[in-house]
Image (cartoon, rainbow, N blue to C red; front, side, top):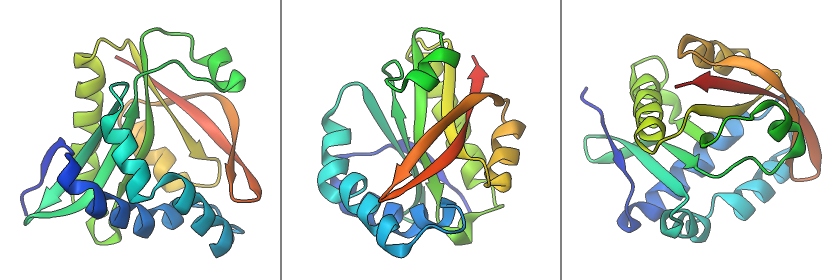
Length: 176
């Protein structure tokens, strides 16, 4: 099945939020509560937030589309890291963060994630970044393998809050 990766548009907001709500809990570590996941989704992955992301010139939202349906997305931030733990290990400038990258469960293993990652790296490179970084939960070995396959290496650690819970992430970096 052919997948198209392109920049998201305002017409995509509701579909992006629906994919985000369906996929975010899949990446949460064991022990995350549905209440904490729902609070994070409401605060960060709502249609209103996607409207803000699309309007922000320092962000890029990519969509993966199959048969006219959004099956994945990536959110790129093109500003320096604000978290001091990240800033200590990600010193390259300009730099891009892959803040979110998720595909629907039925799309795992069929090339959608790889296409989305290649397009995200190309977008960062085309935007002038010298490196790309992301955070991944330390318990998410599958995602870590995927990122490693695409040239990311562990550069440090950081914390990530989901609702009321503090989680521990690896900071992974890819030199462009």
